Length: 395
Image 1 (cartoon, rainbow, N blue to C red):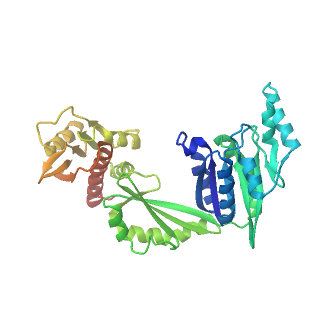
Image 2: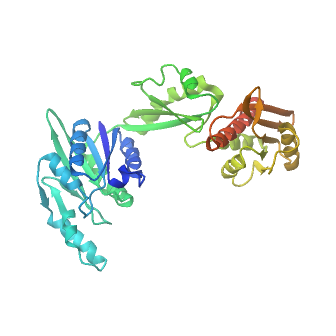
Image 3: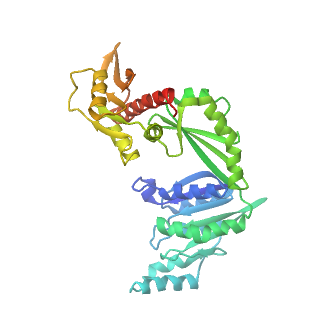
């Protein structure tokens, strides 16, 4: 079954506020087996709201909206829902009494404009709001020759919206659809090649319509493969994913460095900890970026023993810089990241890895703005160490 999420408010369409409600709801709807096919954001305009609700009801079985349930003139969700269904608004005495009591409990008298929060489209149900004055709305919209669409309107206040989801909307969906699918995801993290190159290594696996579904995204040169499978139970979903996850790992090999929220620094800390070894850093181009990553991943300092950021380029080359850093900190490994240099007419970043066997130096092209260059170069340095550890040890 398809679901749509509608986020309502001028503050969202103008970019003044980030819409975190949609992300939160999308995760919950997916978890209970609904396919979230559409995210819609609409301004505080009655005509636009009516059009959005009508369109959503035609293309989704479940619609959840947030925002537009306040007491002011620009809160138009109730009116839009009524217009979309072709019905009038009706005052709900029980909800009005609840809103009045909310104000009395705070030592205040309810303003008359808050009466409109107790108005509901004819035939709709109120969704209780235990902590605020804006009850939600559950409404059924009939569709020709198809099952009806069920629409849930919730407040835009995240804490209220989330509580009402848990207390009312989630149980209502369980009653309406007693045998939903369970949808689960697993993410594999990759580094070392570009997105198109990696996709070419997985022929047919990222095709639309494939089950389990495999999606690919890139952020900061890290590629994430998201595998999605459905089943009647969580265990069934995970079992459906297992062959695909295994095949991806077999095809990509060392390009895969972790899962879920892993970053390269977490992989480095795991590998070094398993071997009882340590690493130190000397950073110029990245200016302490990598040291910060490792310190966060290894807060007890079990494997990351120290880092330095020289104020200027040392007289020695990057290989000598790495060797000196390793000796200074007594580490098993040291990474040195130099400054940009021209090599064969191309600007490159020199990175050196020193260990007990000597020093390895690599030069990587420097592309993009400093905001992109620093983290990308830092990841290249960590990956150089990771591949060395995989090649020489038990990791």
